[in-house]
Image (cartoon, rainbow over the protein chains, first blue to last red):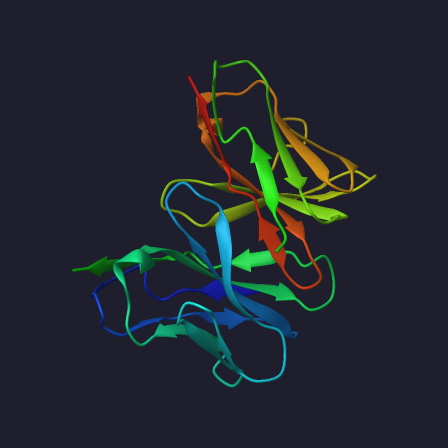
Length: 114
Length: 113
């Protein structure tokens, strides 16, 4: 079975500061990796995903995540955050084969302070 | 991009009544849809996998007779909460599968009084 651990439940940072949201996973088989963002009272939006190829993946709004197989991690980073980045962030994995069922981490609440 | 809608976005019902939530893939066909439940400040919990034309697969601990799922077409799955009780109050989110990823609906807030 797969599991996902997000090490920080809350991360407060100041605007324009860098941020890293940590995600570690456990799986005996290869997986796809995802970061989703959820704004209050809304569904989830895909931020970025790792399927194969380059281990560094980027989103259009400045976030990036790096897949590290040896450390089974997929940490999310942004060099300079904005107030609008305040949201809940979920790391998730799915099996490469099968019904693409997602296993989510517990979520990290990112709060940007002015 | 792929769009998934849910209806209604919020609903208030009385204890003992049933509520139906619709999940639609608007611009693509989805043979598989998922239903999640999310409690405040918590992660998403997978309730069931909905497969078009066949019975849903429920996760352990989810009552199939209470949460009825129907996936009658490639663009529509419905979740009916039967004989709802206050403890069923939650945020229900559906998703539809694309080639590699899931596309999520905006969620439905259910409040049972």
